[in-house]
Amino acid sequence: MSDIPRASSLPHEKHVLVAGAGVAGPLVCYWLKQAGYLPMLIEKSPFLRQGGHAVDIRGIAVQIAKKMSIYEEICCQRTQIATTRYVDTEGKTLMEQSGEAAGFRQGEEVEIVRGDLIAIIMSTIKDVPRYFQQSITAIRNNDDSVEVDFNDGKKGRFGLLIGCDGLHSSIRKRVFTEDEVQLNNLGFYISVFNHPNYLQLRQSEIIFKRYHKLVHVSSDKDADRARTGFLFRSKKTLTDKRNIAAQKQFLREHFQHAGWETDTLLEYMDKATELYFDSISQIKMPYWTKGRVALVGDAGYCASPLSGQGTSLALVGAYILAGELKAAAGNHAIAFERYNSLMRPFVEANQDFGAFISQTYLVDDAETDSKQVDENRMIMEKLQAASGAMCLPEYEDMCRALTS
Image (cartoon, rainbow, N blue to C red; front, side):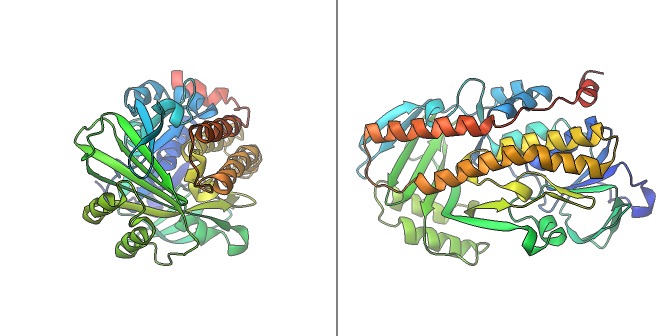
């Protein structure tokens, strides 16, 4: 891969630097291309992360996947969980339902592993320059350009900078003040890891809930492997969230002897080569743009994994940001103002839903069939309202480019 072009070698106005190759970053690159821009993608990791947890595409986000002509491929690679069992401490089945019902999906809504989705989106931007092990160490947000310093000592000058670098966004921290950002910890933690499928699950999943804790074990397309997720409330705070040893100890403190298969799963956790761990938090901001910098996805408006709407928010945000830039004929100030205005109701509806789940989920240890059904019905109603909480604008000029 070639080096990042020198700042002086690029006419900056149409060149946009996109930071973060998760879900939001490649989406932004795709739609910026349709709007006539020349995006460049950077990622601090040495490679695209594969696997990961399952994510959902719901409501109006399905329309955007169809506009990108990736919906059919997403459906081809979707998860194949057929049944979901809820069990007690002894492993006795309390309730069983379809995987789609347990995932609160209806109609054309679809679940896919995060890494598979990223690969599909990346396949649509093969001609977009991308640079790994690259991060930004300084940002100068000027009237006529954005100048950045990279970690390798190079400098760049761009028309716009779009931060798509997640909940712990360095772009957000460098551009926005502490008064402009509210980080709300919802009192939960989440962890996900892979391990051998010792429970011999076949395209199925098991959920165990007790004492404000949830254990989710599933096996999908690879019959030899399973994935476990720990979700739990905690009044304790893990200050060093980047320390893997501290993460594992924190998980042991909460799940040791909790019942069912938790002790065995903790043993597999200790052997896991990759462990995802984070607090369940939301990012709230009065606006997601400043000067020539904009935030998309979790970097600006994380609704928390409890909402199940992070991927859909990224799909909608990328589409609207690029669409408004196209509609404003490149006047970023007008486009950014519209982006902030149009996204606000959708973001707030989904953050409100995430907050609702944090207040009502895993609060009562009593489990019965009727309680689980009632809880699921209430969640489904509120989720459907949040996932369709705006009328998706049409950008005819930008979408026309897809068929030209």
